[in-house]
Length: 147
Length: 77
Image (cartoon, rainbow over all chains, first blue to last red):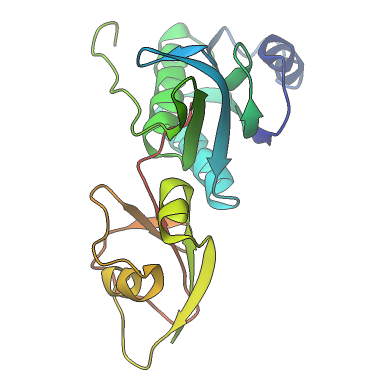
């Protein structure tokens, strides 16, 4: 399931609620990633951020990432929730999660969901900093460490 | 042909447009549509293009009724 939210959400609550909808006894592993807003970036204090998206394409693209993960690994299900609009420090921005029978598929799929989202899904961050407003130019590349 | 054109994020601010439409009696590629729709000369380096919400390259030909979008590198998550 994929969902965009225009207000604050509690990722651990969402995770638990979604898991209740899955077939009990069928999954043995759930890995999740939660991204939240820092109050600093590139040496400046960040007081607020706005997340713009492309209505229609963003949802379609997140669903495509879930479908790809389901094709690559034997998963029971995937969940992606992403914020849009105005965001404050400490707010959760994104939750990705993947459920499978065993841990290998769950770890790999969760990593795939967040990396594909960060590098291909149409979202754009604009930061409000002590130096004024600025668009974030690029997401950092994933480190190979731990992959 | 008639094409709907959308600009997002920094490109929306640079062009001063979020939605516009262009029409042409001749076939257009994505980069030719950029010149007609944006009012700017060069497409900024790293610009991403989508037709009907699917990523395409800038030399892709357009079809009548397409929705074309231009946006900078994505920064979600």
